Image (tube, rainbow, N blue to C red; front, side):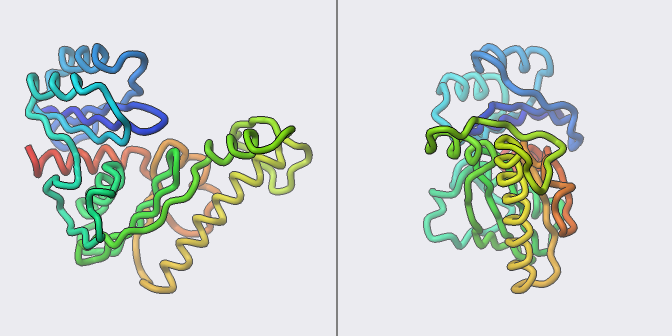
Length: 240
């Protein structure tokens, strides 16, 4: 059984293929999404598909998936492997639902904090009873770099690099240190606060920018850049 998982985020559109329960390949969707997805279907011939989208995408994509596969669109009404006592479940992003589903699937019966590093940082806590309690949202890495450039007259737009000094020695490295080290300390701080309240729990770091931070954190974490896709696969199995 082959499953096509689609993640439409604010920054990138991505796809992944699962063969049975095994993650096979992922890719960034370039250009027009509809013909790209059609070519994936022709190449891999998935029997199932699932879409997580936080953007306004072309509705014909859903029609294509429904005509070619057993298709499910992830929404607040999706059958979940956890409960959500959040006051307004329809406001929970599809990406956060997928991350929590992955945590419950791979670490059942445990407290889990899943930190997604994308356009925004999302902190998602699900307890050992499978109750998603919510979390926090803060600006992501690219958003922080852009905001310092766009809301000032002279600060340049810079990008992250791998060797970030603690003490910046010019404008570029000052900005890089402020964003990367600032985010690392924020994440460590949140983990510390959760630890004070809940004690033993798993921390999973995921998302497109997770590679920049895994080595910067003081706390023990599990880094998995494909964690959202694994959650989508788990939800596809429940709903398809």
